[in-house]
Amino acid sequence: MIKMDNAKEEDRVDDKELDTDTDDGVLEEESAKAEKWKKHYSSRHRILLVGEGDFSFSLCLARAFGSAHNLVATSLDSQENIEKKYSNGIRNVRELEERGCLVLYGVNAKDMSQHFFLKTQRFDRIIYNFPHVGFLYPENSHCQIQLNKRLVKGFLANAKILVKKEGGEIHVTHKDGDPYNKWDLVKKAEKRGLVLQQAVPFFKEDYPGYDNKRAHGKLSDASFPVGESSTYKFKLQTSSQLAGA
Image 1 (spheres, rainbow, N blue to C red):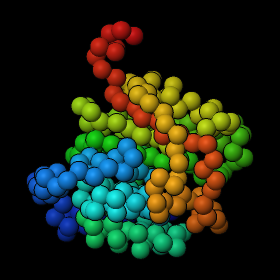
Image 2 (tube, rainbow, N blue to C red):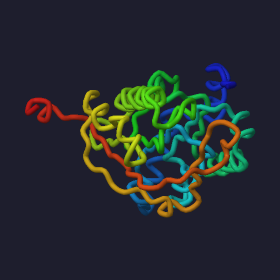
Image 3 (cartoon, one colour):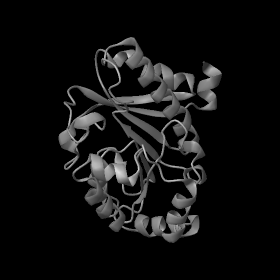
Image 4 (cartoon, rainbow, N blue to C red):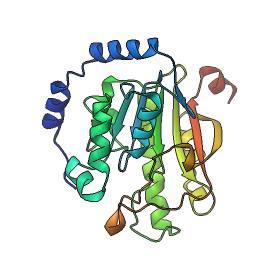
């Protein structure tokens, strides 16, 4: 996988003049407008999207809000790989950027809190839809399950650092049933000081334009059956909750 080095990425962010002061000013302007919601997400939330495929989920939110100035959308892939893997990937990225979204490439969910830009930010919502390391082994095999558990564990540890302490939430959308329940998502979160607030059924049709992708192998641009899935909403454990534990 080809990744942009930090110097190139830093130059790209500088070129877009996305310093914190400018960003805060834009968010204040957006907040003055009428608040818009798409399911769990508000146009007034500062939102980080992790592990995007063709960026269609991010674009769905941007279109619903009428702007993407409150969004930071990230992918593990390089821009070059996005173009190779997804038929609509670059088109979606261009529209996102035109709407004000910051798109970052080469962001690993397991160490994103060390990213030169992300480590300076805090978010109201951090979203990771259908985390998966790729189809290296059969889905229900011990090896595959362990790899996915490590991914989830790493993401939660990093998201905990980047989420706002007051009112911030980490959302993981995840398939229900076997073998996905063996990933121990809730237990992994609890061990990292996160508390499950709610788990709600996920319906793809609630997000017009969202096209979930396999993301790996020859069928990377193909969708996969969502089936019965849920969005798990986690918050930071409070001091009172720690005392009562």
